[in-house]
Length: 172
Image 1 (cartoon, one colour):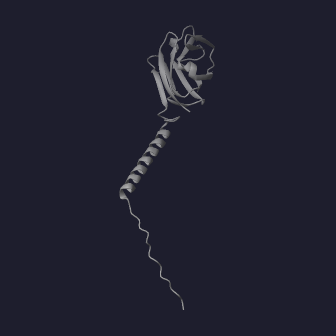
Image 2 (cartoon, rainbow, N blue to C red):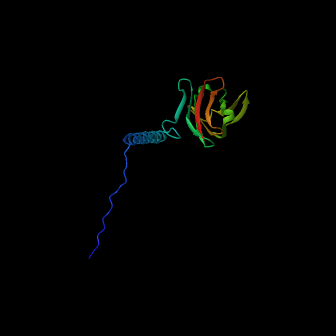
Image 3 (cartoon, one colour):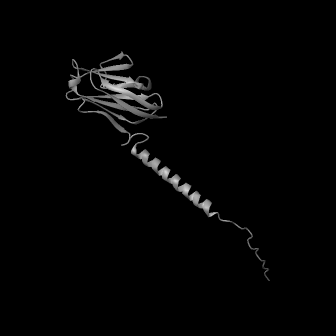
């Protein structure tokens, strides 16, 4: 004969706090929304390369355009593409002047084409390029590496010509 034992009924009582549960769900939804916004911003280029990161200063009408990335990383390579009208050259030479924070905040390991000469002016660096080798507009790519974090503001211009301000945010 089998012996049956009676199972005791559960005497654990739980109280549901629906207000707390709703607040928790709301916080979770806000967290997911913030996470989705960060992912979309990263895909768009807010933290590196992408459409939000591309910026341009100047115009074709001024004869000088600078293309650069709004967002860069500390010690990582970034490019400044300078497009200048050859008519702004003097004696087949175009002098590109970098001033402002660019002097203390940017390392310029190389340029393409290589600069034909460099010099210092008050609070600026002058890079000289020959224009007789290239028809049309002169395109110079400055390979740069930011040396400090935060907002970098610099002036890029031509000797006796237009100058434009660039602003770049440097992430760690």
